[in-house]
Amino acid sequence: MFIDKLKPKDVKDSVNIDDCSLVSNQLGSLLAVENDIDYDRLEVSSPGMDRVLKTEANFVRFIGERATVKLRVPVIELQINAKDKKEEKITKKNFLGLIRGVESGQLLLECDSVIHKIAISNIDKSRLSPIF
Image (cartoon, rainbow, N blue to C red; front, side):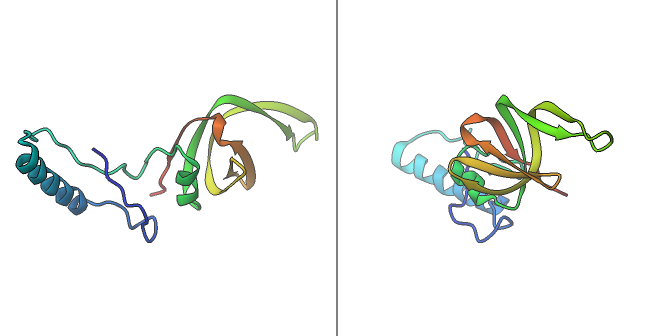
């Protein structure tokens, strides 16, 4: 079972080991008394620092944090070669950057000083990528 805080003060105000222990003890006692259920295998944990991001609300919550994003369908981008000024079309499916916001169902992700607009419906997998 995963637990999370609905309205943390900031990113650092996340679930810690004491929160997991408290929920485990309270839920275990409740299950034993109310339902006579054996809870020996009850595991309570947090989503972790590299938590999965699935919804628009997840991305909004972690604006300013770094994330990896893998797309279902690659996007085609124009890239200008600095040496000979030729345009090249490249397909891109994987991104690593800072979450800058969400607009009209699109994730704004800053990668190498470029803001990419990525349709949230086209995101296959995404998770936070903490910087240590």
